[in-house]
Image 1 (cartoon, rainbow, N blue to C red):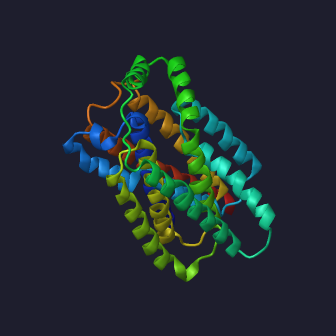
Image 2 (image 1 turned 90 degrees about the vertical axis):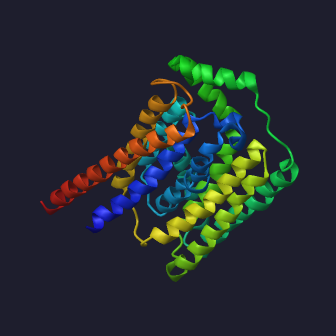
Image 3 (image 1 turned 60 degrees about the vertical axis):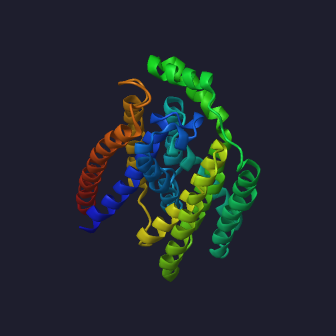
Length: 329
């Protein structure tokens, strides 16, 4: 029963990530002010994405992977898969996590066996830098500005995806990745790495109060999105708030145990397959891009990711049972 419960919790976290992924590949988020682009009846779903799903799973996954000793073979597999997924979808948590492992291992070599608290100090320094060096200046400088829709780029973007031409889509994905390298750098340096470092710290009795504090701070930060219309600043606010909310959730579900490398390998492959399916389903290969409405995108993605989560739990339980039988032999 404990094994099933563990995989159900992992499946819910992965579902959060896949909902986040679906939104980013299924809507022209890079070009729009979401509060002006979406209709009034869609705002409830938009707020659900902003406060619960967008980027929230990334710090949770990073937190638990951070304490696991990843083999070189697994790391190479993750980097290879991550690059392939990057070409297909212009974004993937797999490559981010792989790069995060490399950076956190480098930090671990420098710290070596010194006090665990150094991990927490470095992590908090990175989080503080995100708030006071990146988010706050952007809020001050761009808070009164508005991002206007680039109609030509917007139409070209939508047209390319609706062509369903793999080569053209791949070129566009690489262009968009280069354009948003700053955003991915923020995710790597200030979300993935600090979350991995905190995952190495034994917090024990501090988990519950820290969880409450982090969740409160995360929601408070995300509320700032309602006072800005600048696209870059909006993204930074969502990412910063999701870092705190994600870590708050991680503290709540953390039982102190490490993930098995076998589980990480299978989960990585699962994420890769799911991302490819979601890209094919929501980016013009099947049907029109973008979806007719955010409500339709939300409903479809809930159904698809729920099915994926059930399959994941069944698959992991079966693999775990076979592995345990093999060990007994």
